[in-house]
Image (cartoon, rainbow, N blue to C red):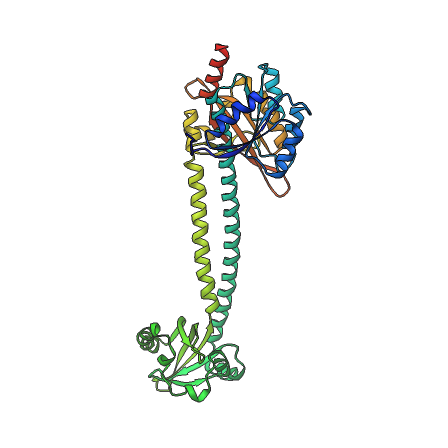
Amino acid sequence: MKNSMHSGTVLLVDDKSAHIHFLSEILSQHAYTVAAVKTGNEALASIKSALPDLVLLNTALSDRDSYEFCQALKSRDATKDIPVIFISDRHEVSDKIKAFAAGGVGYLTQPFIAEEVLAIVETHLKSMRMRKELEQKLTELQTNNIELSDKIAERAKVEKEIKKAKEQAEESEEKYRTMYNNAPLSYQSLDENGCFLDINPMWIKTLGYERDEVIGKWYGDLLHPDYVDHFKINFPAFKKRGYISDVQFKLRRKDKTYIYVSFEGCVGYTPEGKFKQTYCVFKDITEQKALEKDLIKAKEQAEESELFYRQTFEKSAVGVAHVKPDGHFIKLNESFCELLGYTQEELLAMNFADLTFPDDLKKEELFIEKIINNEINTYNIEKRYIHKEGHTIWISLYSSAVRDNNNQLLFAIASVFDISDQIKLQTEVVAAK
């Protein structure tokens, strides 16, 4: 019965029919799609037609050097992230080292053990999928942050214009009258009952009515029904207080459409100190309202994206750490701490070399030097960590560089998987042989 939990496309490059038959059968039984070819040239044609998720590559191809073939894949942008697992009849350590140096992520030897093959394939496919998902979410978060910044800047521009309108509204009645015919803002004056006494040309242009259609009419007759009670409550308060600032209404234009407006104004009084009329200007803020709605939505999306990224990082079952160029940790998730038995505070005070088994340190330092020198951006190795309690842990490490606009290394993202059981199984297999 096929196992629907697995999926992915595997390109099997091997000229041995027995290998092809065995590996194709066990992978197909676990829902992997297997494309089998016998030569390097056939493999290149297959990859050009459709990129596989993973490559199983025999170390002894008939038409080309397998290690050079792997290096060629790793040198191309389109194929550099495809995991390559070498398969071989040879068990020498030097062959394995050569395979990893060429860019391979795993090394399987005859006789093949189905469980080992499936474990290695799924581990590397899972690592690749998680890295791609994380990169995609990071890109989305950066895009949302840029869009949010643009909207914030636009909102600041709108607020600046409103402030300017408010300053104009606070000027004296004489200045209002002087600017009456050419005022850039719509002006209106109401009597003590809220009926129109005066409007300016900009008001007529904005709302589309003729002057004689408006003078003497109650202001509430031009409001959206949802704002009538708002006017009834606030107009008496306006008359008592003597001024308004950024009071918003929804007005009906002559063509039956509605616009949002923001009012600034004051009350004029008779020499005896009694109410005379209002002097108010308003600005069409319909676009601002739409912008504010979009801004709120964009902010919510950015917060959701940030929360998703944080939870993906912190709650990931894979150990993840951000590492400075000098080897010290910047940020670690809970899985990384649990893997090594240290608290986050303890690890932040440590260097990756403090955790690495001494015999494995030099091997990784070669890759780190290439990362720092911008010769490579990623590498994958198997190495040993030293647990806080003193025992060693075999892990598969995938490291990728994060650089600034000048290609200078900012930090590296390290993803680690505990493969101690896999290594133990390999050791037992070798011992049994």
